Image (cartoon, rainbow, N blue to C red):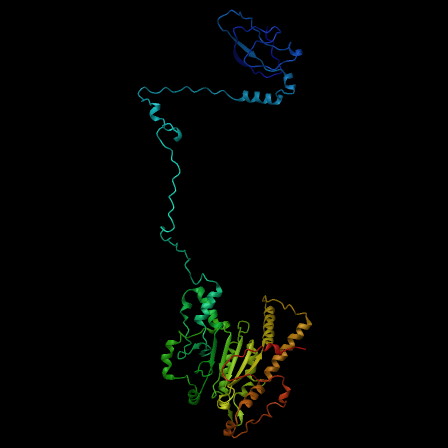
Length: 503
């Protein structure tokens, strides 16, 4: 049959193929194409007239030779794309455009090898073939190693013990609490550390027995250990100072009265000044426990001035200083009918003003009775003055002044609480009243422990004299008594804060 002309609406796509027909094959009688290697889908009867192909003449069944027949397959019609299982039209057109846009590159011609080049045998250069162990002849595949037989427990030797690996211990690797305990064991003395010259020098003759070499290990240990050294030790200031820039003494008698002033030893003592010097301006804020001691023969006005200078050292910068307990130790005597050291604590005296300015937590007056009872009876009396309310009021005043000068001090949370303000004012009045009564309390402690032989030696009665000029109030007008009458030197462990109950 003649081949139908292709449709003009389809892109050109042609395929050529060859088909080897069977010797006994015959052309189809219904006008279909000859038998090919590719099976085509059955076409409905209404499309049989439209199928275009080139028919081949019938072959003779007796022919001995096979004939090849070229079959030309034309592009499908547009109707083929409308069927349910046809090729989408847009995909077919896209593929045709893509194929048409690809240029045809020329096939490279292999370059002939030169005649003088040595040919390589593939057997010489190819790697040896890999043979699986299971198929290798005469080679036994490696199997699991046999486990050694376990010996009886009676024949076993001693099992070696593994040494545990410990991390190298160091002081800085310990917790802070443990380090502070070590510093406390090395740097805290069981007795007060004697100092002089405005709390700046330590007595070489009375070494406290502290090993301060740990302060020179490194900077961090120095900062931690220095705080323990100054916060937890008690520093004893004896009023025997040599003359200095703040202590102007005139006359040979005054110089002779000072035990530690030796002009001949001045050059020798200068060698140890750098070793035993305390930078009070730098470490003064770390001092917590202070003791000022006046001997029985140090009751002059000059001694009172020395005591004021010692207290004012920590009252210059109250915002930086943090003294907890200040102890004043005196040894009064009955002289000309009066007890010595009592006039130090007169109301309105410079010493009372200095105690108000130091703003410490507690002031303790220790009265030694050695020269009053000749060692018979109580060894001392203690008068404790809690001044924490006065200290708090002083700090609040300093914060207020700092804010007025541009500081960033926090405001008082109870500045608008009337009840809290009344409570604070009652505490301040309580502290001032205790300070005003201090002279009378010291006198009562001296009268209580003076013995008759001491009074007779002075030519007075045991009650002393001039007590009417001191205070007109009766002893029963006061609500507390002298505390801590003991035989030895012990700290007052009572709670003094519970005595104050504001109305």
